[in-house]
Image 1 (spheres, one colour):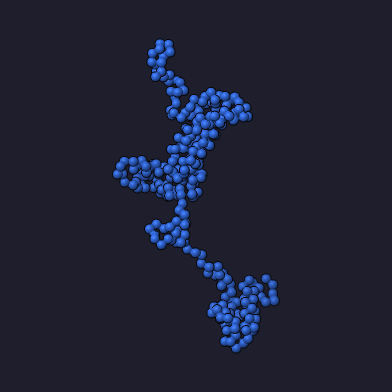
Image 2 (tube, rainbow, N blue to C red):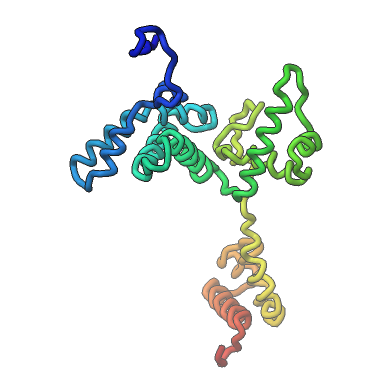
Length: 279
């Protein structure tokens, strides 16, 4: 209880006093320290006063960080980001511009919001879409705040926010882009241990040889019939040179020379060369 010092009777708080203006218990009286900080030059004494101010206002920074809990980031990390915002506020504050709390709260809040915007999105989402996401998220909360309220439709959200249904759709899609699912995560409802990665297709190696196959077709057609047959047996029927030699009644060495010569001829034609000519 306050006492009127002139009468000795209980009095009322002075509405102009700093204590009366403070909106939270974590807003300490530090006007004197800030005035002192403004007058000090760089050095150990100024650093000590700065550290004292940061420590005094740290509970307020932690309170602001608590507003953003349950959004995918740990409370400890949020407190560190808020503390960084507090340090920036202390360094930039001008005591002649008003109360420190009025300057520090938006500075710290902005630092935490930037952290979510720049660091917490698993996918890079344009700023405009992030804003749509926030408007859609708030609208959904407002439309379902009454018990038993159904999940609002895109049309209802559009009517509530003044957005178009396409913009609402973009905001709803962004709600699912804040975090990603690991490719190693097991598929829901499956007991066989399959992961999301198991559902992805593999590259068909046949595509790598499509161009080569087309390039050699003309050269293969120009080969003598026996040499075409030898290449077919070797590369399509996977026969050994010895078996080809027995089937054609020639030596295995002769089969080897015919394969090498035929392949070289087809290769030269495929790359735009002719025997005895230049590229």
